[in-house]
Image 1: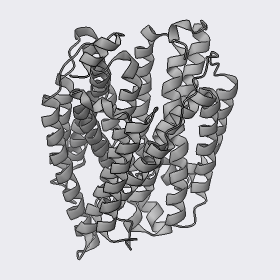
Image 2 (image 1 turned 90 degrees about the horizontal axis):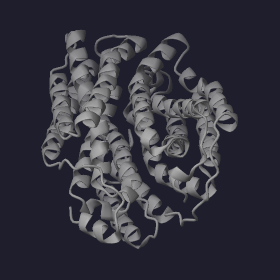
Image 3 (image 1 turned 180 degrees about the horizontal axis):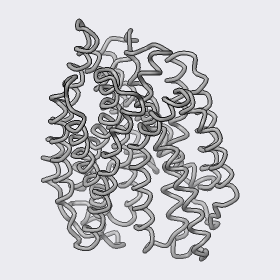
Image 4 (image 1 turned 180 degrees about the vertical axis):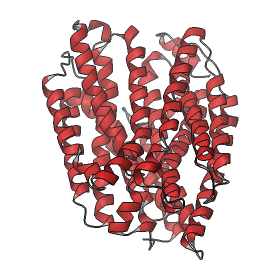
Length: 478
């Protein structure tokens, strides 16, 4: 493929217009990641299936994570803009189908298809930035994209709560039809992508399939499927192990692996992977289960419980901007994952004391702590991963952290849903919800502490330059 430096020069106005379209694409994907959080009690009230509610989120995040590497390879083969348009179409059609869902099973199935489209929206927006802007400007644009991702993901429950209160939960999905058509038209006619030679690659469908099977089996093992389990837990455990073993074998032989195993020979990569996994667990846990507690235990409305997440949204945006600027100015960034994971642990610890009488300001304070932790950790952990590897491997390192963050969200939501269900067993509804929520945040605090320990093991490295093969082999020993 041609390098960014060889791209045709575009006017600043055209670049800004194209970038605005990409921001809209990312906003759609991030909003729908979490928009159902505050709508879940209403959805359950109409469709039933309380014990399956976590899968409304899990199905979306699972297919988003599994489809992301495939979308990236398809962009290389058939052109990023063309593939991005396809993702928008799938996302929009699936959104409308979600709105027409007649039962919880249909909603979960359509959310899974919607997640496939969201995977294309996410990877398409991020990869197209590399085509639109020069390398020296890329960091600034990626920073704006990161803020949009945070605002969309954490603002989703606020948006969903308002729409649910005013129009009904189905309109959270119906509204994606006009929005999706606008993004589709803007992408087709406003987004101008310089023509670039396409590199023919062999898609790693085998690796992607095995990874999807492994993650799905693990989710079924950890969270169950609702009122009736499909198979005994040992079966899911065996499928998980076999699929992971097959995935490792396929990745070792693949010319274009979906997840290059050589990444994990760098010391920082397993640590950043673990931290980003926990970031996904905490962010999805807060966004999904705090509004659920507020509505079902404290009697808040859907919009009111969504508004409670606004301070967390602001904390994420502020913390990510502060961390990014300080790291750029000083070159020091290891302190931020350490401080961030500590903040996540503190916020989760406060929420372990939830009950019906807990003041709103206490919950808000805990969410602000968690938001600061997420903001400090997300951007700088990705930066550490990028600085650890050679320039030629920055893309796969970034994809790895992004994918494991999404997987963490999916698995965390599934496990937390199982904990909530277990807490409700044999107790009155409200008491059971309180017990379940406390168990959720005890686990959240524990995994945050583990991430805090991992953060201390990170090495602070300057960004690597292009190197010769000999230099690269030395770098692999890090």
